[in-house]
Picture 1: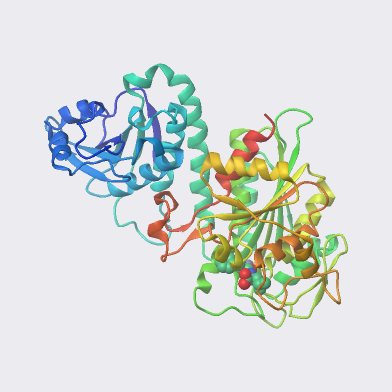
Picture 2: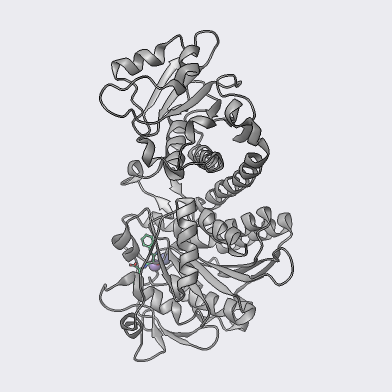
Length: 507
Ligand code: BES
Ligand code: MN
Ligand code: ZN
């Protein structure tokens, strides 16, 4: 799908559907909004008749379709809800729901009237970015294995019109940046949605190599032999049961200018998590193809960093392995040695994410001495129980770093909630036979003990962990409650969040 910013007006645009936003009518008998005059004229007064009858009220995400009289095409009135609640996230959601609502029926091109989405607390720039997100992500569909039911949208246009034409230059810059980012989020979803029979660790390595070629990044792929040479005994143990051997993939983006900070971004890349010998129940096990989402987000973050030329140097580490049972699998009771020499008691082979991340975190800290480390991982079911499936858990040893991530969360609408790590959790992950254990017998603060385990390997510098178990993909149970821009399957959660964090880091 093509996204465009156009100086013209939405009603004059060469589109099948022109979309105009309206805030919710205040009170019982509100007067017809003057902002709809032009749209109303284009449909011979039908919008006003709909308004008078109570059909059109501007309730959040309400769509009202009117056919044009003087030419082909439709005018769609999109409800934005109460004016004082309008913000970037509501625009993202409304735009995505509108794009989904007008799908099919011959709709190939849609035009949005920018001025109808701005307001007291929403600048034209914020509205342009939010519309870009909503249109670009709301129209995403994973069609690799199945033809779409309806032909996809060809073009989404944001129309400046007379109201905003004068700001075409600054709005154009904001649009270009957001459009590039959204294109990368779609690209990331395409990889995160690959099933485990295609997305082996080696496939993720070749995706990284191709990205590195295209964006002039440095890439290093560590195979089993090199992982052994480095001393990554945790990563090797987790991947040991699979016919598709593990890979640690390191991408380097140099940053812009001299003396820039180095940020490491580390992702859990379990291409399939069956649980291993501590095997999972079969119900919903298929969702564990999304257990690579952290690593795939890292791939997307490096692509966005390169394309948007963020200031900091960025080191991306993707810890990729398949966790399956076989005669060569690691077992409960095993003791393995991670990069740097710490020993891990394997109490449960299903707590594998933290074991590959132990090596990846210790490696990136030991090799690159980053100014900050952020990891993304579909790490615990406990995260989903505690915070739900729309939000990520944030654990950090550094308030300044956590604050930056929370600010990026607010700006992007990717929800994050900070949770604690205390000495109690650190005690809980100590082992009687090794330095740490990867699981405790009872389900107790599962997200936090996982964090305490990771902290052991993350060094003494600023580190933040995002548990994205819930937010990485949508499920049939809650999809209708999720923002329409999330769609079916992988969300690529974290790409917008961490790219915003990087854009704002060295300013
Ligand atoms: N990949 C899972 C976590 C997960 C669960 C992600 C549900 C998305 C949805 C992880 O490897 C896992 O199995 N964690 C265990 C840890 C336990 C054995 C300590 C869990 O959360 O049950
Ligand atoms: Mn697991
Ligand atoms: Zn897992």
